[in-house]
Image (tube, rainbow, N blue to C red; front, top):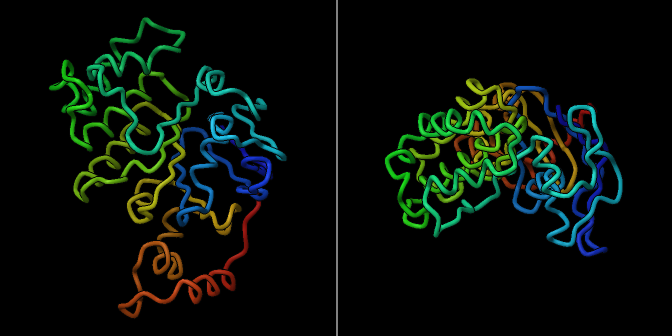
Length: 266
């Protein structure tokens, strides 16, 4: 469904952030993009969704294709109309609007208004707290409820591809588990393809079919999510789980990963 080939992104005409990044997202799959802060995860999503321009960034090399069509450099509104919706990091909701008004905004660009009520009921079914508070101003929701609202607003656009940036950010562990369970349900029930950026590698891999690990603007490792989750180096560095009961140094694990793996081309 989505393919990035050798993408290079520059901010401000001088700062190279993505350095020949390539990945693909299969139809109806859930793919996780993992990595440390500053590795280029959020930039990758913004490159797909057309939000780079708002931050003085641009694609200087490579190609992005969606459903077989070149979407490289398209403005954000056109990307949304193609069927891609980006749920931005930080639970961006319209605080002065009600929950239902926020959801209605999410459906603004949809071409088929006949299923609006049906989609609204699906969102309420997945996120019952939103239905209970549908007349309440979004600014009064809890952090978890605002995250539900941000994802629900994305679903109202009836996207083919949903880009999720750090859905666990700032949430309590039990709520994180619930959010990710619902993300998998969205994929299963709506057949929505999902590209997920996440710091919490353990929970991201638990709901994903495959994953990419980004390091310094390019893909360092990729593969089946279950296989990556069982890899000692990945468990130790990205999940903080050591076979010896303690976490090794960043430099040591990084060196071991380089010895054990090579980037995989797709």
